[in-house]
Amino acid sequence: MADLKINGRTTVRKLKADFKAAFGSSLRVYMNPSCKGKMADDAATLASIRAEGAKGGELTVGGNKTVGKFETEFAEAWGIGVQVANADDTKLADNSVTLVAAGK
Image 1 (spheres, rainbow, N blue to C red):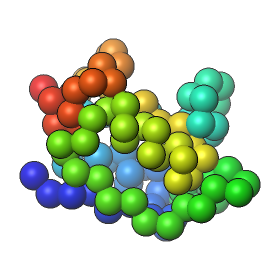
Image 2: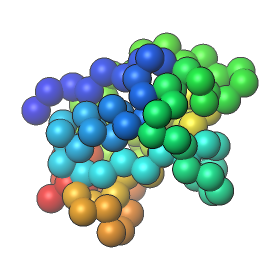
Image 3: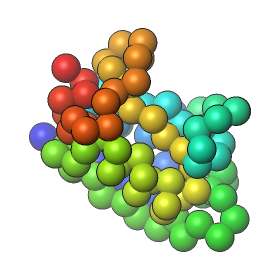
Image 4: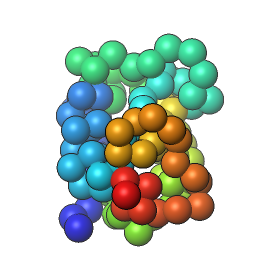
């Protein structure tokens, strides 16, 4: 299991594909940190949809991180909401499981 490195040049489409490849779970990306409303456009880069005032930068994620911690760290760094779902993207993962466990 490799770490997933995320930066501002990453497109939403690539982020979702890399996340699935690394952890086996699906990722839903929203335009705001509350995960309500509009989903992010797959062609957009994270830098282009980052909330004003969010630091962005680079985020490295390991598979042993819990779903809840990852979702919180991502929102704090980018001002973008994400939710981890099971492998076939039919239900949201429990916040207390690891990213790898969410994909099983």
